[in-house]
Each structure stands twice: as structure tokens, then as C-alpha cells.
Length: 311
Image (cartoon, rainbow, N blue to C red; front, side, top):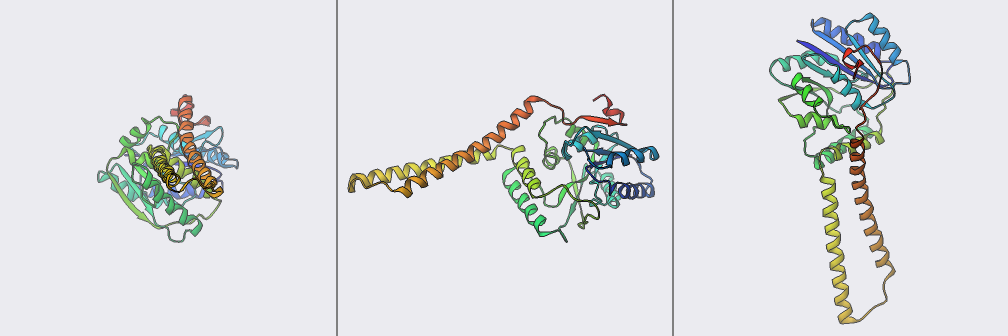
């Protein structure tokens, strides 16, 4: 069998050499037939120069360099498009996804599993990263139609049938965690210890996690729109009950001077509901707008992968 290792890279010049050495050791020791696909996602450091230099020394390396930063989702998609292996393994470039797990992935694949997923624990993770991540999974599993497991990420092996199924989905707004679960197929989970980044800085922060959560919630269902419907319905019922109660009081006790607090509370509450609903609807309309333009997921500046040279 042939393995395609897909690695999205964004400003990882401090890790590229170590990553290449670690992968080469693992693949050589196990005598795997493989290709190493490095996707430079518009890095502003020397990442692409280092990748090109390595490709001159190692024939296993394919590289793709984007014209700008298009995001990790686009980088993974580009890697899948130019992969030629019987299975693909997606890894991060910061070595928090240990290449040493690859033999376990391959063993599970040979048992017949189409998806082999690494699930990391959160030991040693900073509390400011740990708590928002846990809240993310609780929020997204409450709102989406697929089940996502805390600790399971992009670090996984997927068979050719899974790759082809993912590539058949041409949506512009992509959320890979959801896509992996949506396409289905047999899956096995392999636990591993959390590995801390040794060099460089992560580009993922709280705001990135929040944006990612919104993408996940809106990508796979219309539940937020349903929430707006229910919220609006409950608000309408409460308002009608309030009007009915006020009318009965007027009939039996006469008209009192209207209260400032009641008016302001009603205006603010109803205004908040309307703005919240408009925001949710606006997100969906924005995604429809993005899909309707049919722009490419990425633009390739240079590559040595024949599969993408004319894409």
C-alpha cells in the first residue's frame, strides 16, 4: 500500500526540519511506501524556501504553496486533491501529532477500518485553552446533526474511499471535523498523550476557536434558525399574555400611568431578540452568498505536484 502524509503549514520554519526528520525515521523504519505532501498556506516566514530545499533532497516530498493564507481547511483539501495513496494521514506541522503513531494507524487500517482517529487527552493543556475547547464540543454537539468527540481532531488516517467521498463534497464553507463524521464509514479511535508545542507559536487563539465554533454550528444544520423560531414564538406568547393581563387590569381597575421600566424593558428585550435573529439569519445568507460565487477554495502560486498544476 501507499500512504499520503498531508501536512498543512503556516509559519512553521522552526519545526519543518524536525518534522521531516521524525517522519522520515518512522516511514523508513517501517519500510512504508509513501509521499509527503506539504501545503504552505501563505506563510510569511521562510517555510516555503525550506520546503523547496527539502524537496530537492527527498523525492518523497510534494509541495503546494498558496498565493496567500486560505486557511487550514483549504490546505487539507489541497493535500487530499493531490494525494495518490491508498490512504492519507493528516498531521499538524508542530509535532503535536506524533508520527510515531503512524504504525498503529496502518495496523488498524489493515484490520479493515476506513477511518483511524487519534484522540488526545488534555493533560498539561493550559486552562485558558482547555476550558474553551471543552465548551466548544458541548456547544457544537448540542447544535449539530453529527457527533464530535472531544480530543478527536484532524490527526487521522482515512482510506481512499473516504478521500473520494470528501472530495465529492464541493461546498465552499468547509468544516472538516464535521465532514469526517458526516461521510461515515468504519472508525477506530487510538488514544495518545497530549504533546506540547516545543517551537514556534500557535496561530489558534480564543477568537479563532470562537469563529471555528460558529462555522461548525452553522455548517451542518438549520438548528440556529429553528432556535430563532422557537425563541420568537415564546417571546410572542409572553407579549400576548402581557397584553391580555394589562387589558384585564384596565377593564377592572382602570388605566394607570404607564411605567417607564415596563416600556424600556419591552423595547430592549424585543430589540435584542430581533437583532439576535437577524444575526443568525445574516450568517446563513452570507454563506449562501459565498457558495453562490463559486470561487476556488485556494489559488496555487507554485507546486511540484502534477495533480494541481492544471487545477
